[in-house]
Image 1 (spheres, rainbow, N blue to C red):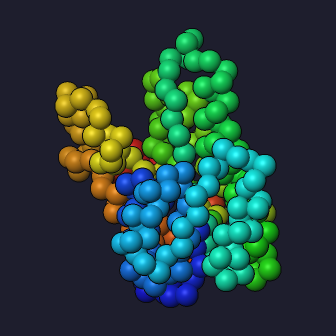
Image 2: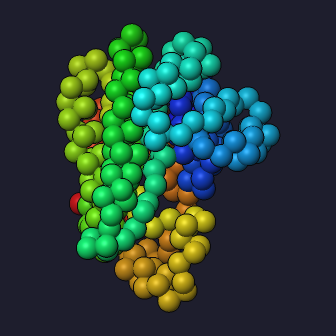
Length: 245
């Protein structure tokens, strides 16, 4: 699977635990990477660890600047874009009757609308070479639902449906658009869950453990490689058997 040498790849949400692992796996397989996120200090730490990657601070909530972000990132990588990994996203949890319109809109705007726009402008770059890969990170709860997350689950389910539609539109241009749907992964976010709740979650996972960030990164590596060339419009579930589509 070492076919990523000289492939130009943008990764959003690169400063988190899953993002870090994605960067590491792609770097180890020779990709040219631009890592993006909102925390410059985290990006600089990545740069120290992987000296040949490029970093660019960007907040994907700035929807009016996404086109220029893709332009700048692509130029930084050398005028060609081979793969985009849409990993950035947020949560703002609340029960439906307490959820404000702002809480609803903010999650939908960032997780769904911004993912659409990033994909749209990346596809425009890929059409020049008639090849490319888009990998959208969704979530298990976009398929199962989850209490207190009606905004988040709606956004992630929307990404899945959107990706299928875009895959249909651009398959003949040799552009593959797929999703990865992680289950519960051990990150700083899940570390905040109290022990009793964590044990309840693990009891529902057939393999008996939380996922690791590298489990998601391995899936990204596969979909970014030419070994996935005949896979399009699909969702790869990485959840230890917790949900079987």
